[in-house]
Length: 338
Image (cartoon, rainbow, N blue to C red; front, side):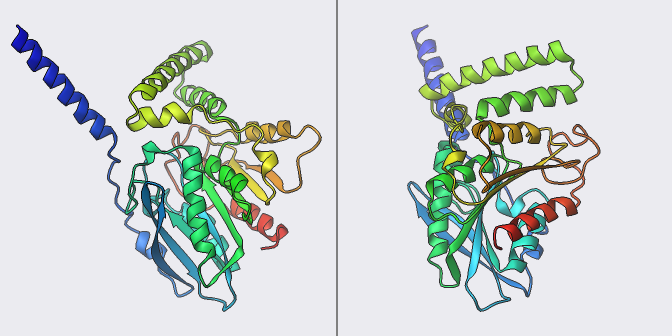
């Protein structure tokens, strides 16, 4: 019996060790089939570089306009949650809302792979929102020192969870020229979590009481996982144990750079009007002129037109360009001097 117990204990330890190790390994991702085509143009050059940060080395790519001999500004992009390469982002998103808008204005575009993705070392699950912001700031510092870049015109853009990241970077980096937040929450993570799951369950045809029960169960499981993650800091257990404690109240008042937050009116994941309301609530005496939030009706989380909030639950489906969203960004850039 003792021998069986010993064997069982060793098996349990080995299995636990394997799954703990497995949880630390990001899921491999390959560049999209049209990635190389999207960054091939006579109007700009593409080059990769590496940035050393605490505990890792980040893979980044610079798209530099060829249209002018004058120094370029730059926008450093941070993507959304979970694993994913910038080389395999939401189809058409980067080209449509970054490259086609910023490069013709003489503003370089910089992409960064989070820790453990692509050629970046480390593991994004061991990081936090604050850590991701610090990583982007390290990339921006390297970009500002490049010979063809105007150091005074380097800003940030982030999508979804990346909105929290670039907001934090805009607060902590006094050299920030601008911040562009695509469908990224301004509200704390707990508020965002509640809206997202209520919206998702509603789209799955659950009714009010059933939605509340399902959300209460989801919240209880999440809180339990957070407690486990503080004791067993591996994989998403570690990330979530810190992520769900992230607080945004008071941050926006610390941003002096121009900042635009844009939302889709048919986004099942992030509620534009609620985030606009949060912005107003942070400034009872009036929102400062440098901060704007706009909701474009009929767009999903990927900035693509959709028939309804439930038509493309997780932002999948057609990836058509939204002229209205592009015009909103272009108008803002013109107003802030780009």
